[in-house]
Amino acid sequence: MFRNFKVLFLIIAALILFSSSGCKKEETHYGVLGKSVGPYWNVVRKGAEDAASELGVKVTIFMPQKEDIPQQIETVETWISMGFKGMAVAPSDPEALVSPMNSAMEKGIPAITIDTDSPNSKRLCYIGTDNYTAGLAAGKKMAEILNGKGKVAVATGSLTAMNSLERIRGFEDALKKYPEIEIIRPILCDNEETSRAVELAETALLNNPDLSAFFGVYAFNGPSAAKAVKAAGKKGKIHIVSFDVTDEHLYLIDEGLIDATIAQKQYLMGYEGVKIIHSMIKNGVQETLDSLPKNEEGDCIIDTGVDVVTKENLEEYLKIMDKWGVEHTFKL
Ligand code: BGC
Image (cartoon, rainbow, N blue to C red):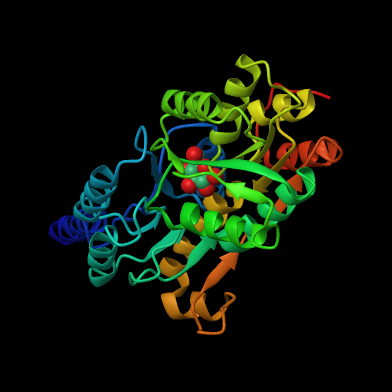
């Protein structure tokens, strides 16, 4: 009797021990931090969620309402204090996010960048578009559409984020070969506020009656310029080269308001971003980095690539969107 009691006691003690912290499965929780609320980031969200459900991990995905550097800093700091195990960040300002991302790294929390980089931080890897090259492609397309002549307004959502600055640099470099194309100043910046973007495009049209085109650097810039062009009755007279494909872009390309758009693969930024962070936690940071592509300086840069989408290849692009499960109401 006494012996049975002792065995029972040992079993209960073992069970208590097993259910306490020592053997409890710790929850793996990652963070994905975007730059603004809108259809572009919804696709990043979908990619991150798909990866999280495949891996059986928890991911918090957060985007400030519009470009908001202080809120991004605060979010990273909160995630560190909440014990997140890793994070993928799209810095609205590459320098401002150095300190919070480095502080994550110093605490052993792998931090990577997606969509836009912060090369001076200790982030382990960047996954996204090669923005300079994509800007060059936009510039070449613009020169082709304008037959090497015209006046172009550039509209963006940020003058601090590296992706925006690199796209503009690439665009301007491509147009250097065309002395008869003028880029008007200043560059229009709306901080990713759609209503402001439309207002700025309307003002540019009023102030420049001889304007030939808009270059829309961020996802909502093309559609915002299209709204202004349509309202001014200048469809067909003013061309638009934009970035990204959202449902709105599909209608506007089909309608002939947007001539061409540089489609990013933001689904992969969310999907691969979560997979890479998870691999760093599961297999080790160095082991993961060893398996990933590096540039000449040995920096881990994963170029997700772009497609130039026009009315001619719209059907092809819809297939890519369907493959990723990105919803769109537009049908051909
Ligand atoms: C950019 C993002 C931006 C988004 C929405 C995209 O083209 O890559 O950084 O937040 O547009 O405006």
